[in-house]
Image 1 (cartoon, rainbow, N blue to C red):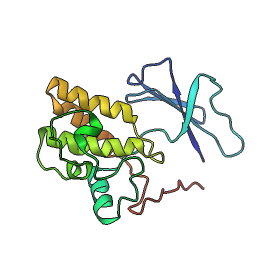
Image 2 (cartoon, one colour):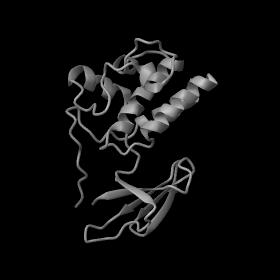
Image 3 (cartoon, rainbow, N blue to C red):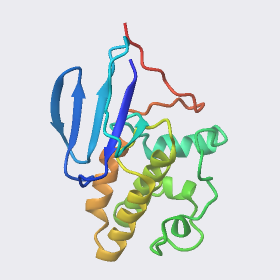
Image 4 (tube, rainbow, N blue to C red):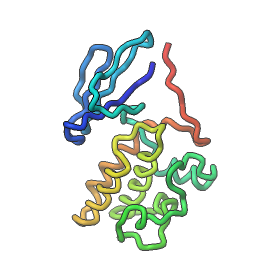
Length: 184
């Protein structure tokens, strides 16, 4: 079984998710994604020519601990777009950690407030940039949320939002291999 995700440009992303599962429709959570399941025998998907279609559909994410351990023990094999040594504040365009804290270091910060936001923001950035993870946010959305937290001075609500997205099902192994969906 293969899942496709169609993002509808005319519906605001943070309003609703619509999942179409073999004839059943369910409204779920925040976001605007239309997931279409094919039954393996040539089922049809979205015919909307204005929709950008990508594989995977949200509900997946790896924790800050996964990304930290992957960087330090597995030579960052799962890191595709960013590297552990890139500076957090530079990548996100913020200044709350200081100029010398790397993405890898941010993943290991202790405590609450901006440190907790940094942990989950770094994980969310990596989740959103990994094509095999159907993460709830795009990379641009993750960066915008972190900037919003700095601007408002309220890191906790954004941290909670990113933590919820990060702490779902991680579809990749410590070696960077994608777990395949098993259907019978």
